[in-house]
Image 1: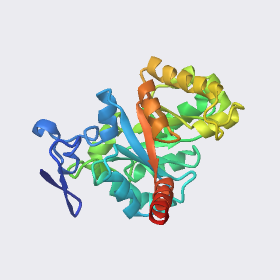
Image 2: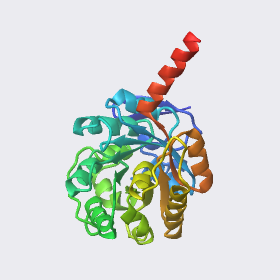
Image 3: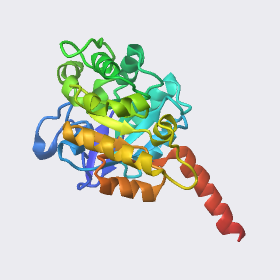
Image 4: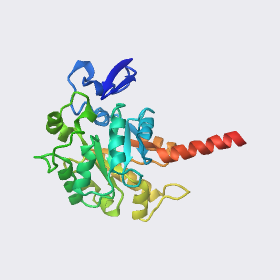
Length: 292
């Protein structure tokens, strides 16, 4: 059992738990921690291992901790469709990071100030929805990266410590560009048609599929019968484009069976649970078990 400190909290993690060193400022083998070593999702990507994660739509640091302590590799804080405002985002990110899990923030749009606000919390990555063009992907990289790679401003007092207790603000400034993940959602017809060029944009790390919006936008929406073949073909195309460009692919899945299938298909970043649905499903199951 390893004991380490993150801010004022003492945390216990099993010695064989990946990234258990994050809060201690020490990387495996006793090496000095870096911003990159403090990003569990980035470490899994670099090791070519799949990463399984959850969606937080309900505000509250308690929800953040419940998801993070369940064994997930990453938790996405959903500021697009979830009830997560600016304050809830600032509470969720450190709560997730403190448990050795990567907090990812999905912002509502792709304005540069939104990108900066999300990353200034210390998020390990940012996800932008409804991407359409290569130019939008290039603009996102500019907003997410410090000069000379981009145009992001520097000054948040919160960012560095979400990568490790000993990480300084200067460490974050000097190492952040290569350590923070920049992700785009492929869920429009335009993005699907130009997915190879989008995948090739330098600084884009992950192509993340939003299957519901993608299905709607290409005219083959998901129904109770499942995923249409045309949408299945689109998923394969996106995954292949990411792999060809040396990037990672991610997907929001419909259920555990779909998550398992996407893992077998070769997706690297796989959603397996959403807080809202998990609570509702659990309540229904408990009620059914208690009354039948």
